[in-house]
Image (cartoon, rainbow over all chains, first blue to last red):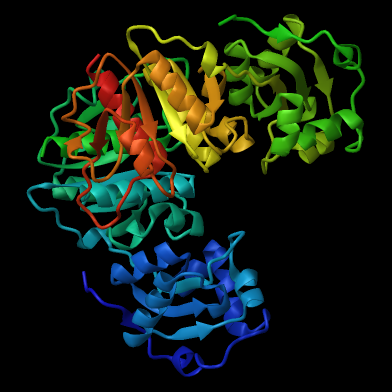
Length: 279
Length: 279
């Protein structure tokens, strides 16, 4: 992955000097519109807010479209350093008034720093698997916070990549980005229909490991192959029978209480840490 | 814990027969007011919504104040069975119109079933620890979804109880209850200031195990005592120096990527499962 801030030398740069004070400015409206998934998909952009999240995104080498700053809201030297460092690297800075920033922000006490970055997707058809390594496949996940938390774990254990299978939540949703604390920009992301995913698995001849409550083997007792794709079902329905049938190994997480499943981010993280704990 | 539905034979019961069609009905307003933490604390009540969540709450033996039903919205036989079973056990049923239900609901397609239950708190000063068992202490946790997901894991591994230390989010917050999928009603809950908590730890002479990124011992390599309290810091700040100094064992979770911490529910669950995996 390229380090350093990729910069768009478009009209935003020349427009970056005057402070914007109107919430109905077209550039401001374009940023607000990124709350909507359709608009994110149309533009290929996403919106990242908060000092730590922006710093992490910059650090990851994400392609920055625009940095949004409300100087009057920046409360820390660290925040001002982040802005200066981005500016030195040539990022387009858009200075706005506090009230304009609030009109963009999804937070209660906004910190005055955000950025618009370019989404990055890998195409599963281009992905060739190495002899070792773990991919994670999330089927039909519906909770953006879960997806973000899972990406955070994937970064920590160095998962090779994540594929969102079927009708899933958008990992570039603001809730997902917030929960990922920057990991959404460090991990290769792909999306695919179930049939395209299944074709990729078949072509790469990679073992699929699934998690389901009635699997005979505990996730702690299983022997995991050196290269594998871990497949996790949706929050609501888990893995379908067809998905389970595609797996060469099924594991369960022991549960001794009254609830019948764990949070998806928790379950995924338990299995990923177990796999990587033996490497 | 008592099984079966505890019933409040108050005025709600006699008022339960007529269908309420006005969103400004005082009983309806009282339920909507439970979105507010202050009102939940004043009344000692909480609001649980959704068929599975209501069924889980009833199953746990929670003390039910009121069941709220919009019959026209109930789409499954299971939902109707839940209502009939609660009714047979004498719970006060409040029948409302779909629009009144929507005025109460925090969901986009509400399922027509909710309940108002009584909160249950244990007092730490009354809690004597057995020779084996694990309590979890969450310090200053600020994310209700995390707390709910953690309670779900606590149920799965049979944690003895959970104490919320310092200024924490409310585990009876609707987001927490939803994320706990009923576990908030199965696990003894306590709350305490740090000094009352520290006094309890000292009195019970129980080892405190803390998690922090720079601890020398990995959570997988640690030897956990048979009785312990696991102390987890806040999402934002982790454990303070004073809190770390109170711990007889500190563990870290290995992280090999660029982000510097895991989601709190994920981190807590990894350590709890590691502790219980050896029992």
